[in-house]
Image 1 (cartoon, rainbow over the protein chains, first blue to last red):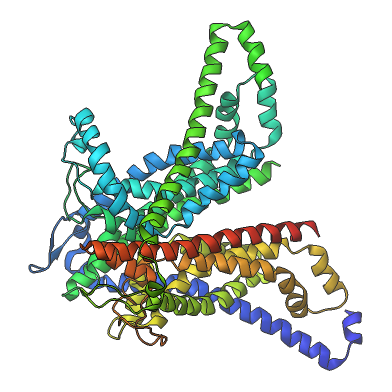
Image 2: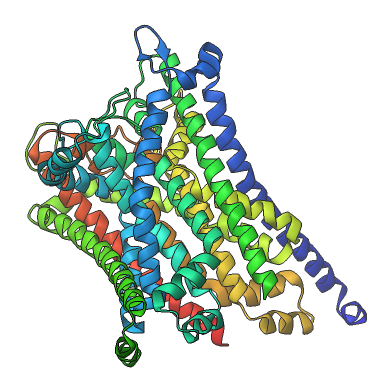
Length: 318
Length: 295
């Protein structure tokens, strides 16, 4: 401390004040950020209180949605959310992982530098633009070519039994898949690139083919990270409102056929919130938002905890 | 690779052959996956380009919105409105995000930083429709829609992005610079303001540009807070401001082909802005990273 004491008194005072001020200012900002998150949860739950006191937890298992009778339930939205996002995950999961493998293991440097950013560009497309494309280009194409084929070939399976349609659950799943492919791909690529080179080379030196090396070394050592990437993608798909609203066709029911219209929690909020005629309807939409908030936070939390643990393990092992 | 294949095919046991075939199939599948992502990107971008470019003209970019059912019109109010809303969002999220990142990197202990970091990550993963519902409940319910509410909603989208990217750049500022300043007797705040922030500035700004590129296309946060607006150019954020994403959504839900054409053309303007800014910002960020990493 002698060096500081030699400095002029005013300077020392100013420095101490400055340090204090900077600390308080940054602390305040951090508290505001955390407070914001708390406020979001509070407002959403508060808005749902009227509906919660009317329907309680039976809201979760009811399929009603009648503004005149004043009865509402979340079940069709829960079903639609689960079906669309699982479908998206089933398509985007393998696809994203394969793209990540291509970028990290297979592609030469030059190709990597071009394809990687292009895949990330896919993530930058605003969801409303993707939805516009989904309803005006993808929907009609799928209804004319892909759904009839699925219906003819797999029509005995209930989910493909319906009549083709240019808007519905199936199209929503496809659009969501496109949205989450880049998420899964970019997280997995980082994971695969972090796999120690020696392990990969060791496997190759033992005579493994590239695929055997990938399966035995790259994939198996990144398993928790891949799970986290998939869960993050799932979380994104669960919560997407706009693109889904554009393509899903709206319908508060549980139909077995994927080609029929439906709704997710988010799409119902997006399509009915504006100018809702009764307080109970508004509150029920808040209730849907609260459910979505809980599901969204839970999926993200699980993914983050896996990531943190995994990172800790990896750095710990080094 | 070719040599290895050749050698193994000389030995040509059935098993070795099968392993080679499986390997080939797997490599082919990865290639096809990457190609399919590129094809989808190309189809989406070209669709927007093809359908949007025809409608695009000087008049379309500079005129007021068409009145209901009328032909013609333009999207000048949407461009201005989106710019004002995003400017408000940036004015909130940039200082808040940078200060939060400074707290995390300069002051917070591990135990304090962990939960705050987690909160930011969770905020980043929040379904954006929730932000719309939240801001409606906080600022719009019982009052009127406004550009301020829209700006605040987008700032919630931007905050975690700005904080995260700032943190990453701060981490890259060489410890030697920081320690040098401290060793010369500079106080903490002088070190931060005079040394750390200036060398991180470029990275912080490009991170912010990326956050803007993400926020400007967000529809769900604005859907209930600035979606009923006049058809002429508005600068005053105390009214609801016309904006690109919400109007594309409205036009895409309309049954008339005329509105669809307008939606495509607006989507083209929005997409061009988003893709160009995010590509440029990414390139700049990669350069900053390299530069900071080297010194």
